[in-house]
Image (tube, rainbow, N blue to C red; front, side, top):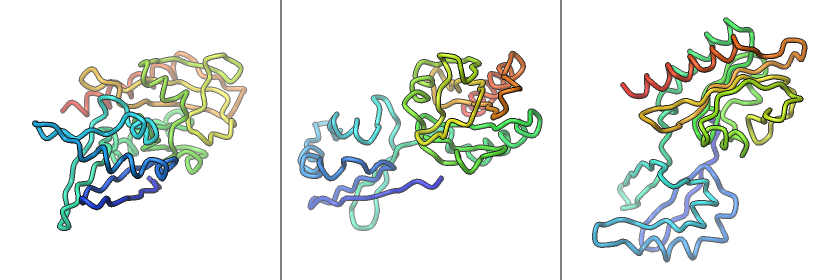
Amino acid sequence: MGQLYFGYECSFGIFWKSSVYAGFQKFKKMFCEDLTQSDDLGRVVVPKEIRRTLRIREGDPLEIFTDRQGEIILKKYSPIGELSQFAGQYAESLSQTTGNLVCITDRDHVVAVAGSGKKEFDGKPLSKQMEGIIENREDFVANKEDEGFVKITLDDTGELCSQAVATIICQGDAIGAVVISDKNEKHPMGDTEHKLAVTAAGFLGRQMEQ
């Protein structure tokens, strides 16, 4: 997915791994001090300020690994990422059927994309607007001049003219979204594209539950 990973090893052998680097240097000392404060149940506290910087939301699942050096590795878990190959095939099929750009995302990145302009979106981090759409479990159709139109990724160039968005729900949790987009302003999205996005989101959500 083109993610940039980094690590920082504290003297007590705890290693942190994340896809977001910005602002981490500022918190090195605080991070190492606070991670040693585990409770009687063995739970480790990750400070709120660090979670905000690394875009770790309350309730986000984390995978825990250990290595031979005794390091503990925490990694954000993406349910949709587990189906990235399947999601890619589904996006390709949907794009061929509609002739549109199709993006399938988790809560942080685009995990699968098909159609014209796919290189501009593949693996890219989501915009704050798109994150909010998923958080609020929204489904909608919007054209560029509409108030509800959003950028998909942080570095979205704004070339898209219309979009149909549906949130992927799995076991009651919002885990991503399906976005069908078009650059041609003469072909705005409508009810058909909206239903396709909702159907795709529902199908992917059910696949995750199996």
